[in-house]
Amino acid sequence: MQNILPNAPIVPTDIPFDSQVLQDVIEALLARYPLIRREPIGQSVAGKEISVLTFGEGSNHVCYNAAHHGNEWITTPILLKFLEEYAGTQPGGGMVGGLDAGQLYAVSTLHLIPMVNPDGVDIATRATNAGPYFQYAAYLTQNAPCIPFPDGWKANGRGVDLNLQYPASWEQAREIKRSQSVRLPGPRDYVGSGVLSEPESRALYDYTLRNDFRLTLSYHSQGEVIYWKYLDYLAPKSREIGETFAALSGYALEETPHESGHAGYKDWFIQHYNRPGYTIEVGLGESPLPLEQFDKIYNDNVGLLAAGLVIGAEH
Image (cartoon, rainbow, N blue to C red):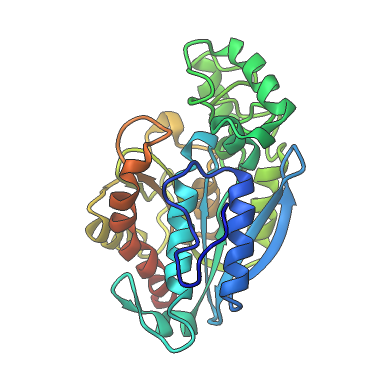
């Protein structure tokens, strides 16, 4: 990234967002907004840092995460732009997403994991720091030759789909994917050798266990849809909260399709904690979504992201 002028936006919204861009943005955000705190929570297969950014001082803790899937990297700047806008209101207060940011800051603490899958993002964006993992990913595409490379790459650096790693009927997810002829590492849909076999999903899992999140939002692309339920688990107020999110964003509220309805982070969070968790699928088209959609996606979601902070406190 080039030097950022004083008061100019830090988060770029017109370039592919790889792991090096992320680190540069985090450093710039920390320098400008000292109330943002960073904590490393793990490393990727290639040894890249997975960070959480926390903001707020309230007892209501919520978790927003993005980029479980490499080619869904547009979700990373969506969350970071929200954090930058929110942080810019403090101290002194202001509005974010139509809500009183000072009140949000006082009652809630946001835990934001902007890039769960840095290796996969670097592969999908053709980043120079993808290193040998890019060549390995290219080799693995022989297991799924119909998926374009690298644009179709969702997995981590070992060819494992990180959002099929969590302990919520993982074995059933494995059987579903095997029935779809996915048995080997590749660009998408491979569940791994076991539950939480990958360091990236393990990092988010462990971090969640160390905290007391009232609500989680997992950002993916695409479809303009909100998935709110896991099997027959009905966390208190989860439907009502989902309807609020749908009204704010204009997205449809739907149940997760059976063929992709197991072993995701949202699934595990709902099952384990009996609290509201949501998968937000932003944008329309094929991932990676074009950056021309960024402004619309952000405008659709900024109210939802702000509301998530106060809704958790109310329930």
